Length: 538
Image 1 (spheres, helix red, strand yellow):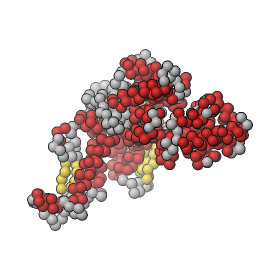
Image 2 (tube, rainbow, N blue to C red):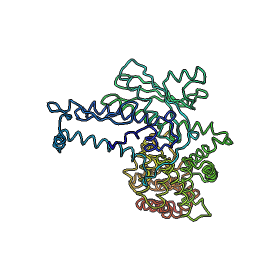
Image 3 (cartoon, rainbow, N blue to C red):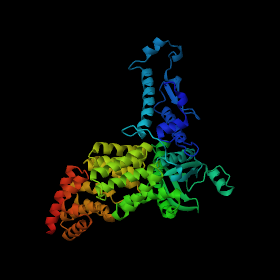
Image 4 (cartoon, one colour):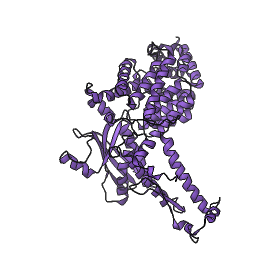
């Protein structure tokens, strides 16, 4: 619209919108092509429905990224065409309450929404621009094949035809993955003929098929390790067709599949940790292994795993200073040094400053990296700025709404701010999407039960939250059991709490305030533990 349409190329869009580096290769990274295809589909769906009477139609011609604006003749019957009007006629035509005004306003709004939406989707509060994108050598390569329709049904064929692209587009949002797409025929030929095939060499592949039974669409999805063709995961999904568009069905199924495969504790990364990272002396895998060890540590926060993971990450960012994931994980661990007291040589403020430095570096390298945004939300929480903490957490979810870790991080930030009605539903979704939800996801749910005085429900979620040695879960268990007059269980929980975390046991107010907890939660836990100690006589 500003006359700079020559700039709308795949490379410039990849860099300006999706945070890719100047070495962007659209053959190995199809994100621009996939998102453009999705945009074309959404526009077609709009004009086939609610937009059928709009006077102006926006389209993105195939093979190009420049929007085209054209008149829909049926929208202005019995009127002189726009091309026959003078400039003054145009001014008179575009006035509030007039149908053409509404259409023109829609065009402007859509253009602004598309531009701002893409910009805000990956922007961070300081609007820092990315420098270099992460190298694909530090990623796991995965191929998404075409989904095959089992039945001779046009509706099934339409759903299957677009599902591959939707899954690939959803998987791309997980920074650990490098995603490729290929037809089933091309992939089969690549595995049965010479190595000169054009099919990409990948470590995993996603296959699937679709069929219909009555009013339900059924989907079968497999994740296959390509070195030995072992099926690592297989799942069947069912989705009702009544009242649902093809787009809605594809979005629902692709989100579930991508989340299960791509999340930090999902099937791909779990398999890589178990097999690929055995050779720690391989320089190409060393940095990736360090990030993986940090992810394992962050599941339980066990102190005995901390130092080795921290030292490994510090070495990695020196060797690979543009490795986004390493900087993001280092920000987490530097932050833990301050909040858990691991750091003895630096002051608490100095340790937090180092954490913020690492988080800023990660976001500078890639503003859409979900771990970088989450790490910054942690840093801002401990700096005492919960509004900014929540803002960064929300941007992580916007960057990848199918990542349970990002969802859980936002839910926890809401809980720490005392906004349980907002956080609890998000945490339930994070747990539902998780292959194996970490115990600390249940802290928020248990705290919500505490505030509501739902003691039996509190016992259930506090038991889950206390797995793997989490002290806060033991504190909530002690409170719940004392309220339910279960003295032996309350005593066991208090004893375990004192062993795990003497500060939380002896001075819960100081412990909670050091983590920036809301006053409502601080008061509930402090009073509850005091009553529990009194109840057991200790």
